[in-house]
Amino acid sequence: MVYSEKITLKTKGFCDIINITERVSHILKESPIERGIINVFCTGSTCGITIIEYEEGVLKDLQRAMEEIAPADRSYEHNRLLGDGNGFSHVRSAILKPSISVPVLDGTLALGTWQEIVFIDFDNRHRDREIIIQIVGE
Ligand code: ZN
Image (cartoon, rainbow, N blue to C red):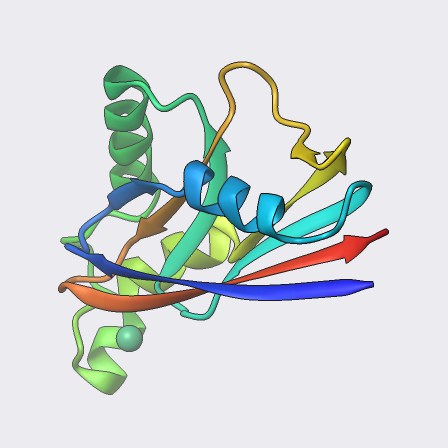
């Protein structure tokens, strides 16, 4: 079967990293699915989903790496064409990707001890966000 649910978030933008593991896990527990796969997908072109150890140092390291890969102060064609100033946000989002999948075993997320699911908002302003959780299994 397929079980779908949504998570809504208010973010600060500018590489705001939000741990959504508990909320995803809660949705999985409310579903009848014991074995399958869960997909976590954000519906935005300036955000991303990944898995990371949720520890202050590595979160800062990831934010710095994103600044190095797609610096906010570089000139972007997107900014020239649309004037919304978030070219760096779109590039970071495309590199990180909008979704991740995690196996579901015995009704729980098969994450490693230090793996946490995070939503990252790369936009250049605060945003209201929606994340789609889709669980496929039996
Ligand atoms: Zn834009």
